[in-house]
Image (cartoon, rainbow, N blue to C red):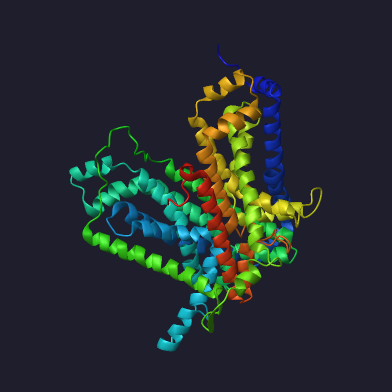
Length: 551
């Protein structure tokens, strides 16, 4: 018997299933209230006068141009470094591959603003390397502005590019490469015509992901940018000056390149086929590796990147555990006790609590959304799906701006509350889990859930007793991702924090901006310790069900 379809029929079936009806209505309410409604408020808050002000002042035009230039340059270099780094691990015979994987993982434990802090400690006007260069070679380093920002954003977001590209390189079957080699392709020609083309989706995705993060980056431009102002910094300034209209204009403009990037992604990737899983046997085939001379070059490259990353984290640790490194190198725990373990400085604990709560809610909401969108027929499904993935295309700075502009006045006032911070974190991380769980649901045979329904289970019971156990690995993996991103977020919540609910990333930024680097370093170390400790506990609980440190 053919299943009846149509709006009326789907609505009728939904009304007969109260559990599904509650899930659908709740999902619509949450997404309309925290995604659609804030977007509308920002558009109406901008106003024609503020648009005129923006385009009449060269300062804002320069900030827009600076944002595009610095983000593009950083995305290019981060993607190139990420690709070469991943290629060395997967296609060469270099030693220390496990070590290089760990190095690529380390920056993920800390917010991007920590890279800015470490850069100041090394290359700032009073930084160790700057002082050494001045005393030995009489060279005064001045890397503030675009040069410093370019370096910091490249290092901050290269791990993101590496992770994206390494997933694609792992999935490439050696069939095509071996076939090309048998036809005479060797060396760079083989790389250019086969390997790179197959890896192109990962390279493009990496570039776009890094570009989006650079567009929204606030902490590094504020610390390193100097007079080289970016839109995210200008938005922050207008919010501080109580100019939500002008901030809304710049927020909307910040969204345009982000949406353009996603459009470009779909346009480019839709033009070619990049399938490497053909169903043909590959047993016994070995991945073609690089020559010995190329291995030497790749090892040197990865080693240099690793040394740079280790140096940035080492200088942070040294400042955290000495009274004032470089001036007074006496070992001390005072900084940690004052800004990490003191009840008067709850930033790290706030980050831990808010991140855990938000990650749990984000994964739970993503699970519900994926379940009803894939499994339940109801009117407005496409609108719900669009609203669920929309936040991933929006820069974090814009998300935070939209929430503070919307909920700082009636009818719903949430300004200054932990609820708004949790929702901001949730909105940015939920779409990733939603996409992953949607794909997982489509791989699970629907008949299993139908059997449970035939035995009398409603949607709530089916979801908790059947669906959740089957998707446990995906759920835990998305929870880990959401937790790590929440612990490190700054741009999304910079407008939302209060003295009561200050978080670690904001504290690092505030201490670094005021020059109390040892406290900023102590908070950074505390944040990394809390993140790593929590991930270790998760690993102990779920063991082989989730791979946390395999990058």
